[in-house]
Amino acid sequence: MPFASYRDNRKDFLSLVSYACSLGINLFDTAEIYDNYELLGRALKGFEDVFVITKSYAITREDVDRSLLRARRLMQRDADIFLLHEQESSLTLKGHMEALEYLNKLKENGDLRATGISTHRVGGVKGALEYSDLIDIIMTILNFSGLGITDGNRDDMEMAIKDCFSFDIGTIGMKILGGGHLLRDINRAFSYVRRLDFIHSFLIGVEDREELEMDIRLINGLISGDTISVVKGKERYIEIEPWCTGCGLCVDRCSQGAISIVNCKAEVDKEKCVLCSYCAQVCPDFSIKVV
Image 1 (cartoon, rainbow, N blue to C red):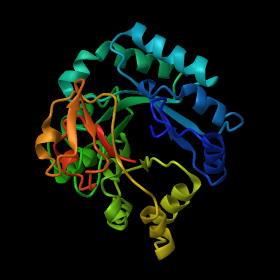
Image 2: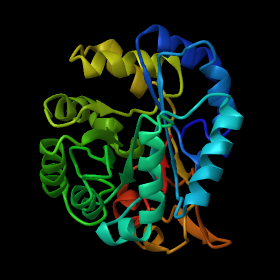
Image 3: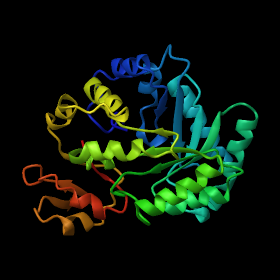
């Protein structure tokens, strides 16, 4: 997502992905809403032994076909894993059942490696368990503070993921740095996920080689002053994602008066913002990030 079309930081993306592949990174995550298929496809050209996850809000069989066709056309390669994006509960999954059942038929035909869901909610993970015969993988938010979990806390999410893990559902953790809000406690963030034995893989957003190398060292427990200096040496700021609904909860929470609603969307005054991240704690859509 750091390289989605609405962000102005695509410089050196191709070399970054190539470098990641050379280091053994073999799982890349995107989504239809990120609008970066063409860029990712170009970056992965020649790297056949990697897996690509994509996600969409498909509801019907036709939606799935359109999404997969668009991904294939723009990436010039197949998506290996297809997830239904941002599922909230078993009721949400029931509403997407046509798409989910069709995805499983595509998998049976050899057109997909795996299917599943992504979610920010404990209810979404529990819902996946109810449909474990149709779901291979869950991708869910998980970090030491529970930041971004919209219907529970970290312990609730851990228990739900463990249940899925015990049913042989693949588990992928995301937002381990809380959308950048946990960078101040990066040692703790990585130490937390390193001890989890019920997560198969982690997705960590990076924007350059230095961050990639730092993440690899941290995930392997190789922490040093030089490692942390990569984080501390970068200028950071709050960014509001395009899906912000302008609910205003962040405005009320910000004691610095740094956030206002403009044209039904939150805007941040960088001069006033102190990166306290309190705004992210009340955002119902996890649309406030530190970049």
